[in-house]
Length: 103
Image 1 (spheres, rainbow, N blue to C red):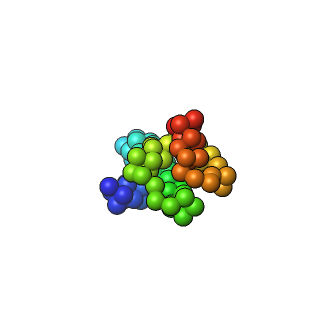
Image 2 (image 1 turned 30 degrees about the vertical axis):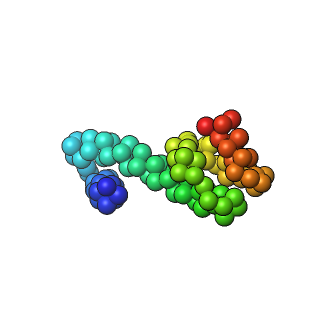
Image 3 (image 1 turned 90 degrees about the vertical axis):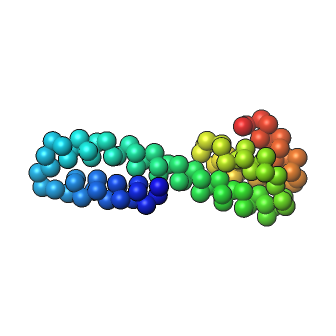
């Protein structure tokens, strides 16, 4: 899927570089842009969640699959908030309390 999105993005860029794109090219560019942006946002969210899980694992030890699942579905804003909050955590209970209040 990632390779397909990269190819679609490259196609969009190539079409937009044409000196005089025709109407069909313009329509295709407009349709491809949101797809690429959505895929990119999802990749950023997944990457931040993976990094956060790694940091939490180093700070607190093994995390349950349930907790990891909750972190992976957090919106990007909550992932970033949890990234700041993790420095105050002393135990898995602190993490669980944060998730109960914020997830």
